[in-house]
Image (tube, rainbow, N blue to C red; front, side, top):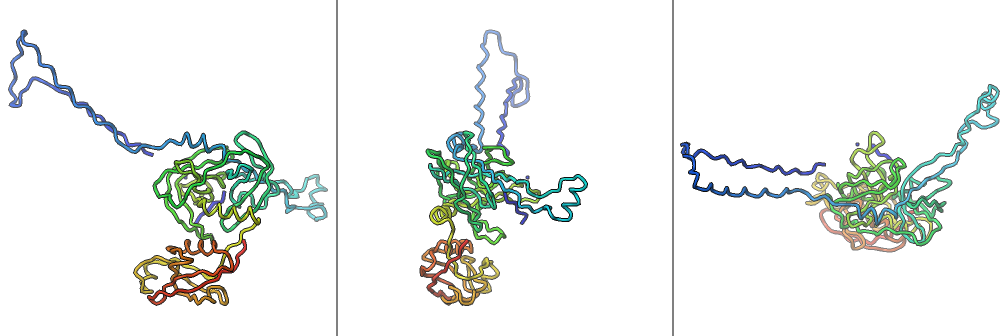
Length: 381
């Protein structure tokens, strides 16, 4: 799990009990005792208590039963790189002569993560940082079977990796639509935090389209689902049991969960997986610009009434944007017939464009709309 430093209340209805006391009239005078021959009046029934009202919490039992077998544990083994003392080194000979065993730094290291099966023939999605520099990757299923996996490819930019195991007839996750996700809706994560297999944690979506200060323009889904080391690469489910994201990062000052977790939207991950499966690498478009968020102050200084769009802060000389006539200070509001609301939108649309394809873009410049044609070139990663 990658750590970034950039750990419920059920409504309770109170029931009031009404106690009826006799013996006094409204005037406060004492009433005479009833005659023995006169039957006592039947007391009126007490009003029924109002039913308790509150938020009905969802159950994730069926989700876990159905989707749990699609989640796997991943062990990434990295052999020693001989970073310590080696034979021939003067200090190596010094320790050897005094009967000590020099540390050659060759002990293998093991990192744990999670993943989930996206095809019956054994393709598994996880995080790139989970299998980074691994010499061997072991995938363990919920039925305790273990497989040595082949790394098909990894994309550091989005932190998505695809591995393959030799198996057939495997259970497969259902892919959801992150575009329909709304803040406040319930979600669940399944993974292996600290190696505890198939642990389930639940929470709500806190926000969408979060940009992190790590150079990536991935519009993360922010949740308050408990995610810890070992959860990396595991799925984030909606209440329908569909995967909407890959749990990737947490905000933490301690290394553990502090209430803020981030997931890669599944549509971005599956797009990356498709390229990795077909070519083993990811090729995305680039136009040679540096982007900046459009704040209210900047928008006002540019004569704009809204903060919608992506502000171009700098343009690479001789790059595709420069050739198209894009200038610093331009605000891109449309690219390839798709609206651009944020810098993340623009970066994603550029990356999704096949290099060499000419597309149209609309920019605001000096309060006027300007249409340009841009031909992105390739950015391999």
